[in-house]
Length: 258
Image: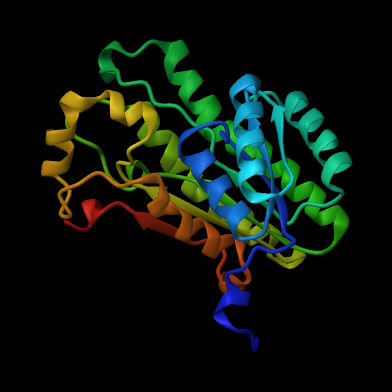
């Protein structure tokens, strides 16, 4: 491949969706992808926020940014979203499966419905939206890039907060990513994941009492910013990672390296 760096990392003309795109990491990625030349669909259960976010990003970037309501745990809802997406965008070049939640509960006290909810959104939801994207990419026969949001919590156990369900769900995403990568390599579809550490999203920002505890365990002694994840995701979506599949990029300030 003989291509300049600007072309390798460019997303000019690429089209795809980001789940959990209304806010937080998903919104940040959509903004970054749009600046790199992509047309992006924001997929979220909160359609009001997603619609406003899409409007703002579109006005800032001049790119086609639409919002779709979707319950990622419901295959019918995912299929409905995918059908509408293809009507609006005609093709899919990438999918970022980023929707997720965390419920902190001691394992011995965890409610069954909470454990199921975390696993359903974080693992099943990633599979259903990746499956929908993969099916569309196979039909169009032009390959594509799928990136799943895992977590450093799929590699280690966070302390001191108890979150067995979240950790298990993110570890599952890592192996799911590798499984899809192997199955779909023959179609030219690359499937990778990114494992963020503590990132200063709206949710994280509210846990101010935990910030000193978390940063004491991070070698870089700070919580990351959402913008610091864009490069990893853009690399995995772009031609720069054309030989990378089944891999996981950890962006955690050195947390798990200790």
